[in-house]
Image (spheres, rainbow, N blue to C red):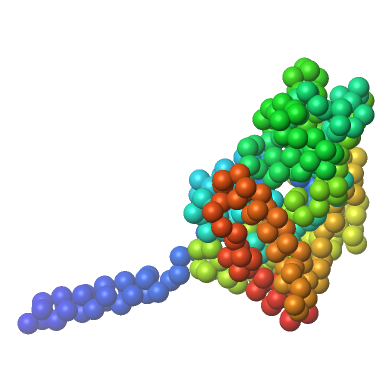
Length: 331
């Protein structure tokens, strides 16, 4: 009888101890974000370096890739939860069946993205019969190049195309394998120093190159408070650039392997909306289409014409403005 009581006691103790261990929460994994070398994305490293992510209660792992398409491929393959990318590419991954939603507008490229050319070429019209590069078929780079040519009266059939990653454009120009190509900093600054000239800017084809932060819809539903904390931290980092410019440029340049000159030029070539501008451009004024919705419509129409989409995505399918809305209310 005594032995039986001891056994019962031990069993009860085991059950209680098991319950204690089970009740202890496993530490959350960091939220992984793919990021590439682009001045507009670099303030994410300020959030990390200055402790904004930590202060706002979120653990973030930034996975840096050199090229834009590399970070997008990482996201496609499930190697990260979110990605800094461009609106056309976010529309594209949604069309591929990866539910992805924009939570934050990072920047608008004005003179940051350029088409840079051989010194003998004075304008886009001189490209007839010549070779121009972009980063990938149906990518934002492809749309930008085609739209720029169309505005200059150049048909797609009038030129030759070559796929060249942004940061390899200068090397291809030097080899003579292309006559012009789409690129951005640090390659833009390096190319200008070597005598190559800019023949087109992003601002001449507006609503195409809008950089955003987007996450898989699953992580948004599972960890909304942390997504909100990430957006808040990035906005704080964005403000830090303008209040502590020297320190900010140093942090961002070191993180992305970019010279001070290239980083300054890169920042001068973009518009980074603050919280209020994010709200207006994502949600829009009553009865008016938001800027991001207008961009989505243009991009969707492009893909429909090329047989890449069968229907236009609605803003509600791709935009998640609730985090910006909540931060506006709190402020």
